View 1 (cartoon, helix red, strand yellow):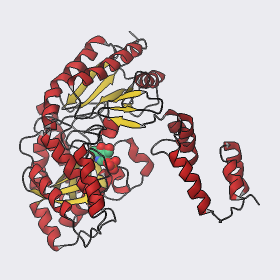
View 2 (cartoon, rainbow, N blue to C red):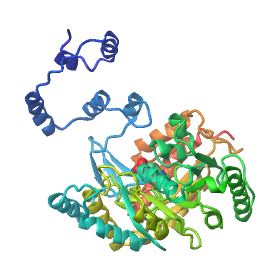
View 3 (cartoon, rainbow, N blue to C red):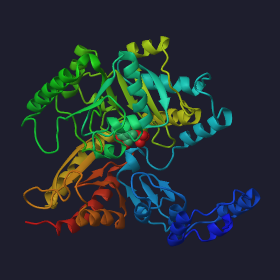
Length: 492
Ligand SMILES: Cc1ncc(COP(=O)(O)O)c(C=O)c1O
């Protein structure tokens, strides 16, 4: 019989691991907790080097989205974050040009007031059962959110992240309307839990199919391979006509909600054409379908407005979902907000769900302090001031690099589309196979000290909303340098 200790000693050899798996050996269930404690007294004091971190990560963790081995080999290490930068264990500095997952909106230095609020909350009431106990911080944050949202979006339900917020919104819409179907768009991402994955239109959905029932996808105003029209007006008109037709085939009386990211995020930073959000609002008003805006990425300033739906003429959605920017992602927190008539329904009818970490007081305290910091430091004004500066840098990239096909940006939400030739063909088609030039570009960013997300034939420029002009230029200088290398792959 192989004992647990022996297995631990031979764990680093993958050949042996595989042979162990297939020989069905017996493990002892005896564990010496004193020894473990002593071991970790030492480990906690030890500074792991790069190799030890990566090896332990491989030995003891699994990655999200990608196969662990490859993801671990490519992973950067963040030992310390500061402002718009983070540092690895060798002290190498990276400028964060994607705010991690477009979420570290206040940068990597946690404002003192957030630290203080979290510490005070931990000391006063660290946890409260959300179903029967309320906390002062829940009252205060809810009042602040009600103040921040326009219209009568005044009631909030707290979750642990974006996907859970969308799951909750789906359920609320179904309960409120008594209808089952949900419409969502193809060029969208709504999260990685079952319902949110089913809502998601992009290929990240495929691994989770068949998914939840009742979701029907429709095409965006900006499909990948064709156009609804040449002008914004034509695009809006045709895509709304198509949406109306989709609704008539599905039956308006069967549809609980239409979910949209007001400004499409990872699927291309796509600002809705003029009149589009207003058109969806009108359709919803006529049909009794609820308009749900996923503000998980847009929300709290990213698009240059406090919320993405505010890039419209007075559209107020029925339900909004949020996370990320609500507290700069310092702790896991999401929320769902709803208008008066939806809230009225749940005042007398059960929402029928709940989880342990809903309304976690420490996360709520982080959000209350982070949002006050956001207001005090006029972060939204910073985004508005830097919006044209970022556009200018993007335009310069376009002028300087034949591989830059174009760019889109609003607020500090930007993306650059790349082309491999003068015909405008991308290096990687939509969801197509990887291209070595894109892999090299991504590596050049890292080597030159910049972190961002490359997706197919594009990359993002989404720095923390607290970035300044000098830091923005520093990031664009690195992009410029890396693109000079990519230009060598341009086929004239
Ligand atoms: C628009 C949108 N909705 C939902 C989510 C899911 O949020 P979370 O990862 O917190 O579950 C994301 C995450 O990137 C997102 O961008």
